[in-house]
Length: 204
Image: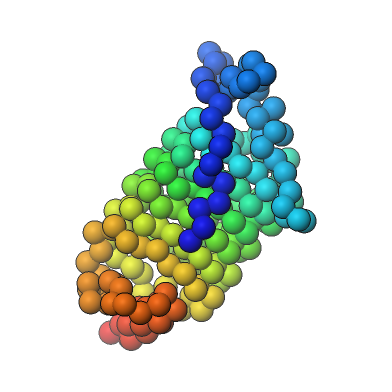
């Protein structure tokens, strides 16, 4: 899986007394809003925002002005612990990268991002999937490696558009290792085998 947006962004950050964010870059002190505008851009016709390595501890509500147009959001390598319900206002979001943060509970708001196609949540501390995650019918790519997941939900078998799944380095006990582990086949064949196993067990 391509880990887009993980490079760059070495600005030093510090919190101010009133809870606002301040950043020190090459041009001196600037606000979080300035950083957002610096990191905002386009790739072709796609609206993107890269806030990786931005020393964020909370989701930046300052980006709400992009909620109708933002399609690709990267916030990897920060210290974010959760995602707010306001994220469901980002109705055009297709790509979300929040790898290498401090998330322990799978954010329920992600289940409402119907447009989401690519999700990278690897290198967090998540222990289980939410019940409604299977409602993301447009999801094609999911990376949740290097977490604390022990069970792959049965509904993953019904996620017909899911084509790429990274789950290595989790303490998975279900499905069993002979199903979860690669045995030399390609991603498509392995994922089809995993889905078939999950569908079979839905009726048990």
